[in-house]
Image (cartoon, rainbow, N blue to C red; front, side, top):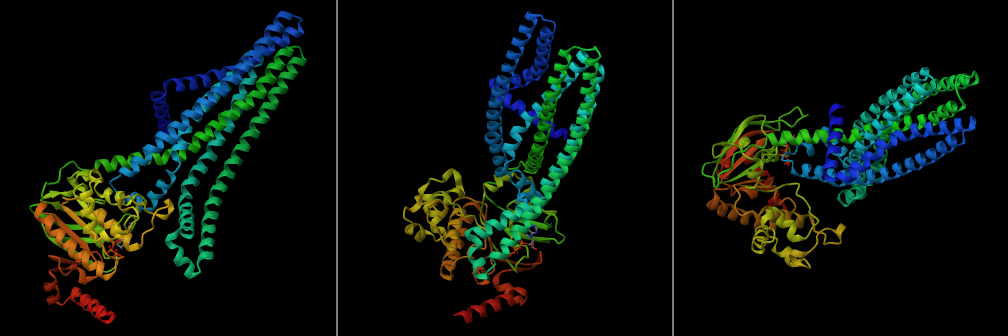
Amino acid sequence: MTRYLGLLAELLRESWRRYPFPTAAGLAAVVLATATTPALALALRHAVDGIVTADERAAAVGALAAAGIFALDRYLRDAGEVYEKVLADQLGAVHLRGRIERTLAGLDRLDHLERTDLLDRVTALQGAGWRIGHAPWQAVHAVAGAVQLGLLLFLLGSQVDPWLVLLVGFAAVPLWFDQYGQRAVSRATMDTAEAFRLQRHLFNLATGPDGGKEIRVAGAGAEIARRQRAAWDEAIRGRYRARLRAAAWRLTGWTVFTAGFGAGLGLVVHRAANGQGTLGDVVLAMTVAVTLRDALQATLFGVQVTMEGRAGGEPLLWLRDYARRAARDRGAGQPPATLRDGLTISGVSFTYPGTGRPALDRVSFRVPAGSVVAVVGEYGSGKTTLVKLLAKFYAPDHGRILVDGQDLAGLDTGAWRARCSAAFQDFGRFHVRFGDAVGIGDLPHREDQDQLQEAVRAADADGLVAGLPDGFGTQLGRRFDGVELSEGQWQKTALARASMRREPLLFVLDEPTASLDAPSEHVIFERYLARARDLAARTGAVTVIISHRFSTVTGADRILVLDQGRLVEEGTHRELLDAGGRYAAAYAIQATAYAHDV
Ligand SMILES: Nc1ncnc2c1ncn2[C@@H]1O[C@H](COP(=O)(O)OP(=O)(O)OP(=O)(O)O)[C@@H](O)[C@H]1O
C-alpha cells in the first residue's frame, strides 16, 4: 500500500514536471473547491438571518455572496475536470503505456512470457497505464474530499453545536468499511486473471486462423465455445462476488452514517425550537447536511477509484522490480570479437520454475570454435532449453556456460545477443513489409539491399521474394491486406531473418526446416553448412543445429544426443553409428521409414 501511494505521488510529480501549468491549475481548482461549500453555507446563514432580523443590507450581501460562491464552485469543478482528464490521459495512455511497452519489450528474460504466475501480471498490465494515470487525481480528490469533510464538520461544531463534531466518527465508518470491499475487488482481479486469459485464448483460438481448420474438422467449435463460456463465467463470478461484497460493506457504512446524521439534524432543530439557535443555523446545518453527504460520497469515490488503480499499480510496481532484477543479471563483460576457444558447457542443470523435473540435468560438453554441433533427441528432451540457456534467456541453476573461458552470466546480455543469430522452432510471423520482416534480424542494416539479398539466398527464399508482387516491399499478412504466406514460406522468412547478421559468434537453428519439404530442407542444410564454415573462418562462430530428422545432421562436426535432459551420447555421425547405441537405433528407424516412403 505504501509503495502504491508512493507511486501515485511520483506520478503526480511527473505530471508537474511535464505539464507544470495545467497540473498547477488542476490542483488549485481542487484545493479551492474544498472551501466553496463551507463558504456557501455561511453566506446563506448570513442572508437568512438578515431576512429574519429585517437587515436588508446583510440579507443582500449574503445572497450575492452565495450566488458568487455557487458560480465559482461550478467553474472550479468544470475547469478542474477538464485539466484532470487531459493530464490523466496524457500521463496514463501516452507516457505510462509507452513506458510499460518499452520495458516489456526491453526485457532480456523470457520467464514473464512462459510462467503462468508472471503472465497473470503481464495480463493485468494491459490497460494499466490508463487506469493508473487517473489514480493520482482520484487520490487528490479523496484527500480534498476528506479535508472538505473536516471543514464542514468544524463548521457544524463551531457554529451550531459542538456535539455535531461527533458526526466525524459516523463519517469515518463508510470510508473504513469501503476499504475492506476494495481489497476484495483487488484480490479478485488478480485471482481471476488466469480465467480471463484462458477465455481470451479460447476466443482467439475459435475466431483466429491458427486453430480454425483443426477446430472445424474436429467439430470442436461448440466445445470451445462452452469452455470459453465456462472460463468467462468463472472470471466474472469471482469479480461479481467481490463487487457484491464491496457493495455490502459500503451499504453498511452508509447506514451507520445516516443514523448518526439523522440524530444530529434532530438536535439542531430541537435547539432552534428552544431558542438556542437561529433559523440561519438551521439553514447552515441543512446546507452542510446535504453537501456533507456529497463530500463523503466524493471522498469514497476518490478512495474507490484510487484503490481500483491499485490493480494496475501493483503489476506496474512488479514490472519495475522485475526489470530491475533483470537488469542486475544482465552482466557487464563484452564478448570476444572472434571465438578462439569456443563454448564450454560445464555441469549445466536447469529446471523451469514451478516444475519438478529438470529440463537439463548435469549436461557437459565442449563446442570448439568454428564447429557445427547438432543436438538431437526425442520430444521434450531439452534441446530448445539448451538453446535458451545459450542465448541467455535463462541462467543455469547449476554449472556454467563459458564463452572463450568467460562465464556467459558475466557477459552483457545485449552485447552477447548482438553476436547471436537464431531461428526458433516457434518462429514469429511478422505482418510487416517482407524487407522489414527479414531486416529486423539486423536492425542497423535493415535497408542494406546486399545484406537482405544474401540473407534471403541463405534461407533459399529467393524464389519466394521473386514471387511476391512488390518483392521486398510486399506487405505480409492478410490482416493488413497483405500477402499471406504458407507455413513453409513463413519459416523461410524467419530463416532469412536469422541470417541477416554477418558476424555472429553463435548461430542457432532450432528445427529450421520443420515446415519445409524435403528438397528445400536439403538445399537449406547444404547452404547452412557452407555458411557455418564461412562464419567459422571469419569469426570462429559456432553453429548449433537442432533437428528431429537425423539424416539432416550427419554433416555436423559433433552430434549430441539428449534424453530426458541428459546428454547420453556424443560423437560424429560415424562414431555414433559404430557405437550402436540410441543414435544408431533411431537413425536406422528413420532411414527405414524414409526408404518406405520412397
Ligand atoms: N516454459 C516452460 N515451462 C515449463 N516447462 C517447460 C517449458 N518449456 C519446456 N518445458 C519442459 O522442459 C522439458 C524440455 O523441453 P524442451 O522444449 O527443451 O524440449 P525439446 O527437446 O526442445 O522438445 P521438442 O523437440 O518438442 O521441441 C520438457 O519436459 C518441457 O515440458
